[in-house]
Image (cartoon, rainbow, N blue to C red):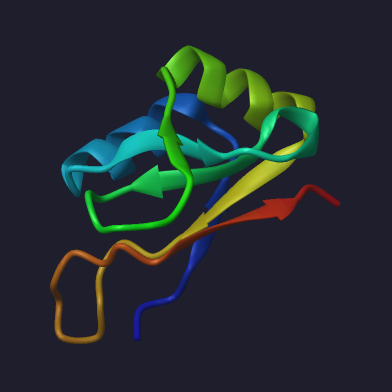
Length: 86
């Protein structure tokens, strides 16, 4: 598996998601919701949001975007996770 990287750069995050046909989304919760990248696969209670709202929640909660660019066999990876900034 390729090594995962973190970023808080909005342009990098958006480019990564859109290159994989991902869209900003959230699950309803406290503090604006739990952020997700929606790849069009069924996930209960996933609400589409704008990139602007996505990044407001991202910054407000002081998150980093942990992601993998390629799988071990060289294909585009969709692995991603939101983690707290230290």
